[in-house]
Amino acid sequence: EKLTVCVCGGGNGAHVMAGLAASRPQTEARVLTLFRDEAARWTEALKTSDLTVKRSFPDGSTDEVKGKPSLVTKDPAQAIPGADVIIFCVPAFAHQQYFTAIAPHVQPDTAIIGLPGQPGFEFQCFDILKDKAKRCAILNFETLPWACRITEFGKKVEVLGTKISLTGSKITGQSQLKFDPFQTLESLLKGQPKLKQANNYIEICLMAYIVHPPIIYARWKDWDGKPVSEKPLFYQGLDDFGGECLKKVSDENVKIARVVEQKKPELKQSNVLDLLDWYKQDYAETISDFSSIKTAMRTNTAYNGLVHPMKDAGDGKWVPDFHNRYLSEDIPFSLVITKGLAELAAVPTPEIDKVLAWCQEKLGKEYIVGSELKGKDLKESRAPQAYGFKSLDDLVNLL
Ligand code: NAI
Image 1 (cartoon, rainbow, N blue to C red):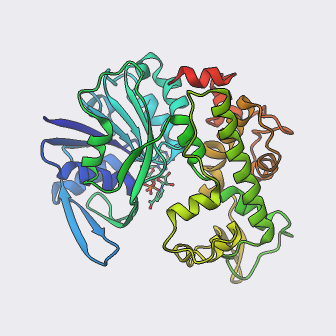
Image 2: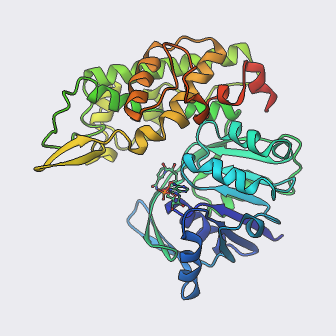
């Protein structure tokens, strides 16, 4: 049966998703991109060429998948009506704009998929789509399935690596889809990665491992403000203090999960792992020393060459860039949500509070005050409190 897919976004991930979907028989792939002149540029590019996805596999082999989206537009009235599946493939800070744009046009029994959705995706979706969201299936995947980059805008994108498995959650609500959204997405992804279903959407939130803010906090909290002559290694430069900080944040995260499921058995959290166990599962091949979080990070060859985000300070020196996505995204769209869930479960989180307080100051924002989420910028985050959630029951009500 014919399937109509609308991919939202115009970056690396959106290119791969649009190319793979367009290559599939019986599938109409549309793209909605709201950013600047991306829709016009992409449309122009497709006049003379297909969209090619070049995929590299671990054994060194490559292949090419070609397709042509039927439409690339910035007009949601063209892109959304008739779409069976809407896939967000765009950084979380842009989601609000997309939800607002699609809201008037979304039809019942549509699958709305965050690939990735990132924490707070469902809260924002229900807030903007209101009752329409209840008639849709809302899926949220833990991350993007690929490491990828555009090589020629609108025409060529390269997949450097594909995850083996990817977990996502689903809120079915009152929707009655005429297809299984996990199976459909898996076939749109050409069978890789294998998709697994999480117990619920809160589990996906607490599974999303938050490592960037603690690493940045640990590295720079005692920095004297003087430019440095080398960009420090991000993961492999982790010291004892950083390792301890990550361990405590991970312990708090696991504790939140355990308390949530204890208080609300409907919100089972069995897939939420301690950070070190998570590394054992996801990086078994590339880490040589699993004795601690510190050694796991330092010996992970997948992290070779990755450095702290830095800005040029002249004279061959560098200063940290605190407005990089590692903080500007991972605070309001990740760690603040974890803290919000902790508050609803009444779990104290002294380490997360410390990291949040330091990071928010670097961003010039205020989410947390002392140990409470009541800062003036809370509304800009996707914490459940920003949408009026007051208890764990409110979380259960979305199921
Ligand atoms: P990207 O960096 O390619 O996204 C850029 C796109 O976002 C732009 O083309 C535009 O469509 C939109 N955009 C940028 N600024 C905007 C603004 N001010 N307003 C509205 N829209 C704007 O993102 P990418 O690489 O596709 O990643 C998507 C998500 O997946 C991100 O959250 C990223 O962190 C995550 N991810 C990406 C990986 C990768 O290899 N590319 C790997 C793992 C996760």
